Length: 361
Image (cartoon, rainbow, N blue to C red; front, side, top):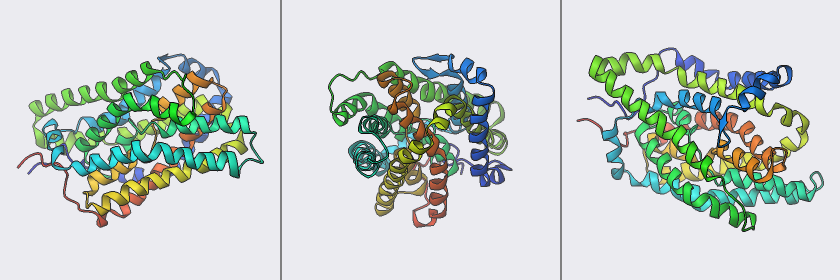
C-alpha cells in the first residue's frame, strides 16, 4: 500500500538538521540584522523587488519552503477530506471565532493596562492595531513548514489553509474594522489576492505538474524513495535564508526599540500558546488524528505575517507602531512555532495515528 500524498517521509540526514534548527534560526537572525547594518544596500535593493507590497525575493523563498510539501500531495486524497470534517471545524472556529478576539483582549490588557507606565497611550494603541492585524490573519505559507516538521497530512493541510484563505478574503476587513473601532480602514485586497496566488496557487500547480511528470517517467517507488529524500532538505534551508532576509529588512527597527520589542512580544507569545492549546486540546478531545490535529493547531497559532506587515505599512505607515508590532510578530513566531513543533511531536502518542485521508487501497 502506498501512502504517497498523505504523510511525508523524512529525507535522509534531515533529522540531525532539524534537531539543531533552533540554533540555526538564532544564527540567521543575527546574520540578518548584521547584514542590514553592515551592508544596507543589499536589503534596500531587494526591498524594491515587490508587487502590491509583497516581496518577490521572500515569495521565491517561500515557494522553496512549501514546494516539497505541495509535490507530495495526491489530489485524489483531497476528496477524502469529507471523511474528516472535525479538523476543518476546529481550524475555522478557532481562527475566526476565537483568535482575533483573544488577540485583541490579551494585547489590550498588556499594552494599555499592564505596560501603561512604559508606553505612551497613543503609541500603545498603534501597537494594539498591529497585534489586531496579526490576529485576523491565520498562517497561509509557513504552516506547510510546520506541517512537514510534525509529519502532518499534506493534503489535509492544504485544504485547511485553502478554506482559511477563502474566509480571510471576506472576513479579514470586517474583523479588523470592528476591533479597531473605525469604519474607514482600507484593506489592501490586492495584497491578499496576490499572496494567495503566490503562496498557494503557483507552488501547488508546480508541485502537481512535477509530481505527475516524475511518477509517469520514473514510477511511484522512485518518487517515494529517491526524489522525496532528495528534496526534503530544501524546506528548512529555504526557511533559514528567508529569516536572514526578513531580519535584514527589519534590523534597524528592531535595534532602535529594544524595550518596546520585549513588551510587545509578551501578549503575542501568550496568544500563540493559548490558541495552539485551544485547537490542539479540542482536537485531542474529538480524537482527531495527529497528522490533522498538529497542522490545524499550527495554522491558528502562527500568523500570516506577510499580509499583516503589508497591511500595517499600507494603513499606518512604515515607521508606525502598528508596523513595528507586526515585525515583532515575525521576530517571535519562528522560535515559538519550533517550540510548538517539539510539543506536538512529543505528544503524538496521545492522538490517533491513522492518516486522515486514505489514498490508495
